[in-house]
Length: 191
Length: 107
Image (cartoon, rainbow over all chains, first blue to last red; front, side, top):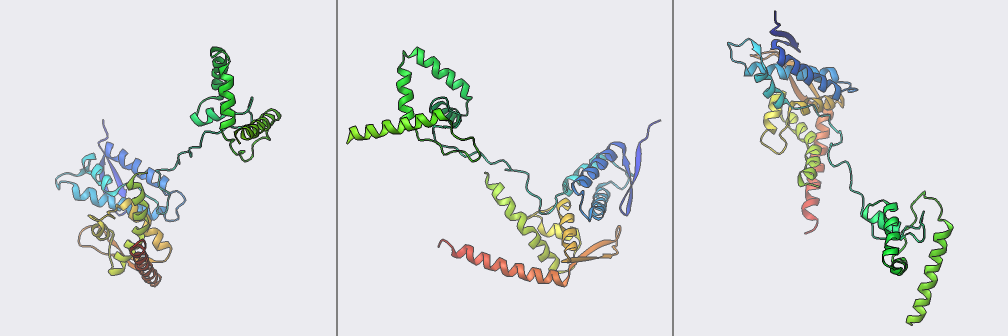
């Protein structure tokens, strides 16, 4: 024996639904009830929606057909649409892109001056990877990497300290003073 | 950000105003409101309209009464309350001022 239809009372209308259509109807109404959870008019809105579904299904049914099938229900639900709560935030464009920041040295947590950290932040790479690469380059370049680092250290501005970050450690502070010292000497030489 | 995602909030904000206008013109039931909005930028579905109408009713801006229909069950006919008419007039006035500002600015 197979159950072929379910009788459903939709607000003021009573209709026969095919099993599959009834399952679809139940899931639509459950979802609607979830969306309206906490709404003081939940029951009334659901009753209105039930009536709208019943009216649309009845309108679509051939007069000889006594049972609502998915052929009537799907387009009816399509026309009625999912329940939207007025004033709810739209679900799109929630995540803003992080602002791009200029290439800067990052003193906090730096090994020397923060050049590697600056590059790591700028390119979104792991700082350890960049440090290892820098040390490798130091050997491969036969020491020229030291010069490159020093130039970058002098040229790149320091990033402003992040709010709530740890105080600047001693070594970068020293190197920062050193960079300032070299800049002033270079300035004296240039003038 | 796509153009549509900028336009959607504008429509969303104006829908309530338009529904008040439609209900304010004469006593209507929901299919009348949907028909009036269909084919405009504000085409709306029951899934949106019923929750909105119930919010407006809770704010005492609209009220409904049951009316028998020739075919099918009785229907809810909505009309504006006194507060609804007052709010519609205020919105209409505000809309006129905004429109003037928008067309005046930058010219």
